[in-house]
Amino acid sequence: MPKTKEQKKQIVDNLAEKLSNFKSLVFTDYKGLTVAEASAIRKLAKEQGAEYIVAKKTLINLALDKAGLKDTDVKSLTGNVALIIGFEDEVAPAKIAANFAKDHEALKLLGGIMEQKYIDLAQVKLLSKIPSKAELLAKLVGSLNSPVSGFVNVLAGSLRGLVYVLNAIKESK
Image (cartoon, rainbow, N blue to C red; front, top):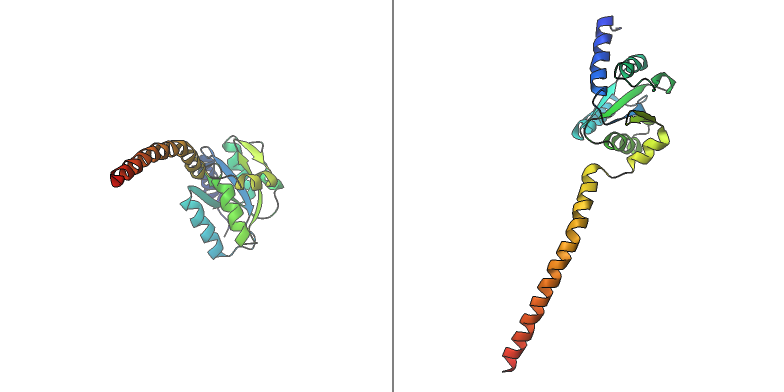
C-alpha cells in the first residue's frame, strides 16, 4: 500500500534529523537480501552505534537536501538503496557494510558520505580497512605503555642481579 504524503514527510523529517548529526554513512544496494539478513545487518549496525535504514531514493534525496547535503544525488546510484549511518565512529558504517558484504553477496556497497562529502566505492572500501577508533586507542596505549614496562623490567633486572650476587656470596661463606 502506498504511503501518504504525511507518512513520507515524517520519513524525510526523521531521516533528515539523523543526517544532521552523523559521523559518516554508507550507501548499499540491498536487492536480494532476505528478511533475516536485513535483520542481521540492522542488529549488527545497532551494536556498533550505527543504524541501517531502508528508504526510497527520492525520500533519501529530500532528507539529504534538508540536512544540507545537497551535493549528493542518490538517484544516480544503482539498485535499491539503504543507508548505514554511523553516529559514534567514522569507520563503523564502512566496516559493517564491507564485512557483511563478504559473507552475503546480495549486499553491494555503492558509496558514502564522510565529512559532508560524497566518497565513492573505492574510498569506502579503503575506509573499511582502517582500524576502528577503539583499536587505534588500544594500539596507542600499548605503544605508550611499552617503554614504561621496559624501564620497570630493567630496574627489576638490576635488583634481581644484586639479589643473586648477594645470595651467591652468602652460600659461599
